[in-house]
Amino acid sequence: MSAALAFDLLLIAALVWSAARALTVADLFRGVVLFIAFGLLMALAWARLGAPDIALAEAAIGAGLTGALLLDAVGHLRAKREPDT
Amino acid sequence: MTRALPVLIVVLAAAFGALLAAALLDLPPHAVRLPADVAANLATSGVAHPVTAVLLNFRGYDTLLEIAVLLLALFGVLALAKPHAAHVAHPAHPLLQTLARLLAPLMVLVAGYLLWVGAIAPGGAFQAGAVLAAAGVLLRLAGLLPAWAAPKRMLRAGLALGLMVFVAVAVAMLGHATLLAYPPALASGLILMIEASLTLSIGLILASLYLASTEVRP
Image (tube, rainbow over all chains, first blue to last red; front, side, top):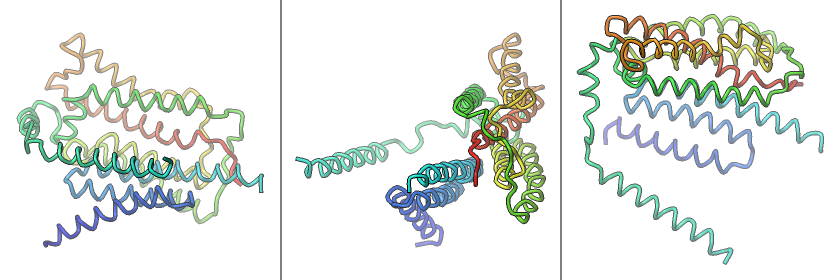
């Protein structure tokens, strides 16, 4: 088992694990953080597949911009919930 | 009945997944010889990087429709934004402000580099626009940019510039040959002009997707 194959298998396992946890975790904020981590791992996967353009776009848009939008949404949901408590 | 339903769904999903895997493994290894076709025509495309050539020249129509879809998505966000809410920027911690002020010009420089190097290496308009949008989001988070829920003339011109330039070039080519068929002598100049306006527009559109929110943060 070469180092590249071991790295790829670890990357696949991390991708599947972070995706599954992002969907099943109870706290919304943790889910968004896991989604951002998943985006960064996906950018690594694109780089391993030899597609640097998509890796650049995935890191900036998938992890960065979508992560910022989702964190904003979580903040709004919390602000809307707090007047009830 | 209610206890059997999730099990049935899991079994059906697993069967569908197995069918997909079997279909994927059944495909011949090289169904289409695209890299050879692209490499054969790269000299007349105006750029030296195959991905940029495909995006901006061979499949330029797809990129034109992509930027139109981005602009349409922004229309939806602007339609839902509340223009009478507070636009003011709430300054954050001074350390964060200083860091944002230091990083933003560097990010603009990186965006310019990515735009320029897209002709010969991985880069191009979408990547440069994404870095510009990230700079905008960073400035908003540091409290240095107000919200953009009611864009005025200059911002609207910047948002629409990419699509307008792309459509203008496409229509200009219509009088010459077919849609988006650049003459090989002008191809690199046209592609650079289109990419520059696309970078500005994509950066502004993606930043506006985040900055159109005018909720006042405590």
